[in-house]
Structures are given as structure tokens and as C-alpha cells.
Amino acid sequence: MKNELNNDNEEFFFLNFNDLKNIDFNFLKKIFIIKEKKNIDLEIKNLNFSNKLKELNDLLFRIKADFENFKIRSKKDLENSYKHNMDVFIKEYINIIDHLEHGLYSCKEISDSKVLIIYKGLELTYKSSIILLKKFGVDVIDPKNEKFNPINHEAITIVEDKNYPHSTVIDVLQKGYIIHDRILRHAKVVVSKSC
Image 1 (cartoon, one colour):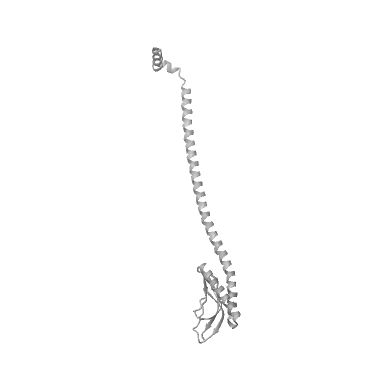
Image 2: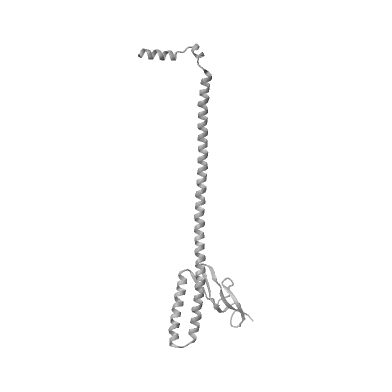
């Protein structure tokens, strides 16, 4: 059997030119074309996959950037919403403080012991309210005897007075309030004018 295999192999390897005539070269050519076409198809598929991968990476990068921008915008919107709501609340709370001040001023004029107890209670509530506002970054604008500043003050009246320098706040009709360098309410003031 070993001899037969060797004989078969020898026959195969020792073909003569006459045997080559029997080989169908068109068939071989088709096989090579098919093989080459498959290689080209694989290259095209690899190129398509590569392009698709680049497209998906670009899309992923854009989605990630959009998400980061969304997070930043959401954080800013939340901060702005917080600031706005805090401003609205504090402006309303300031009105209550104004009423406390009016109550304190009214009680100060009366010299009754029962009114003095009410006065002490109002004063304590007023001081606690101011301390609470300071905890949230709110400062009072009380500019009496200061130079008039149109950024923080609103001149309600201008009075000629020789006792004060020009553009000095003579009286504060309503205190102003500021939070983190933002004016919540201008101080309403009476301003001096030189004669």
C-alpha cells in the first residue's frame, strides 16, 4: 500500500505537458477570481466595519458631550431656581421685618409696662430675624449719614440742609437688603442738597 501511495504521488507530481492540456484554465481562473473577490469583499467589509466603528465612536463622543452639557445646564438651572426662590422668599420675609420695625417704633413712644413687654418680644423677634437673614447671606442696607449711592439707594426726597454735606443720606425711610452682591431692595432714603 505504501508503494501505491508513492506511485500515486509520483504520478501526480510528475505530470507531463500533455496532462496540462487537460486542465481547465478557465475554471482555475474563475477559482482565483472568486477567491480574489472574496478577499476584496472581506476588505470592503473590514472597511465598512471600520467606518461604522468610527461613526459609532463619533456618535458616542457627541452623546457624551451632550450629556455633560445637559448636566452643566441642569446644575445652573437648579442653582438659578434656588436663587430665584430664595429671593422671592426673602423679599416676602423682609415685609414682615418692616412690620416688626413699625411695631417697635410705635411701642417705643408708649411708656406703659405692658407695652414694654410687647416691645421686648418684638425686639427679640426682630433681632432673631436679622440674624436668620445673615445666615443666608443677606445684609441690611442702613445708610444713614453715608454718601448717597445710586446703586444701593433710592432717593425719595431731596432736602436742602446746611448741616449735612451735599448728597448725604439724612434719613432712611425703608432699609434696603442685599444678598451675595445682588440688591433685593434698595434703601429708600432722604438725601441732602447743599444750599
